[in-house]
Length: 233
Image (cartoon, rainbow, N blue to C red; front, side):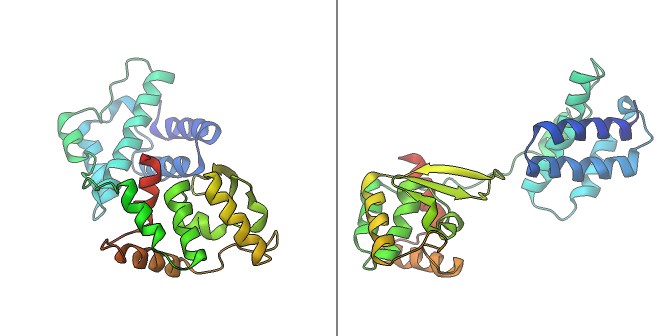
């Protein structure tokens, strides 16, 4: 089978079975592969040609991007072996390629202790700012998800996240009852309507209030530190 036909079959599979962001990753790699090696037989591709292709595709990119494109290409050959050509060798499966396109190493983040986060929240003077931080630290929401909340999205302990980062139409998050009660009271007192944003501030302002909250207790705090804390506890 020619590379071009194989790439089309692989993309059809991902259109039916994968998320949009996953499909876009495969489409980028496989369309480039088809443009360069489309008339070649799948089994004729060598590890050296894979290396040349990936270097061309990823020059100047971060290691995480290089790794992602290598993984897409390797998965393509594995897909062909499992679905159409049993026994097809995977030209990506070589020690040198695995080493060059290994996953990037990220620093281990220091987890925030529960008592530390409690202190951060306790020392926030404004109810609005405290709720924003609590939704990240107790509910695991991203900054963007907190800022997109509208009155209609709050149903007691249940929050409806519309157009989330995952690509789904919506997701549901449950928050602790005490936080839910404070959130409802905040919405009631300020007469926030169903279509009104609960927190009509900018992304930059939200990040800044998190930093200020952290500095009150001697921390350089970022929103994702709070989301990571929620995932841990």
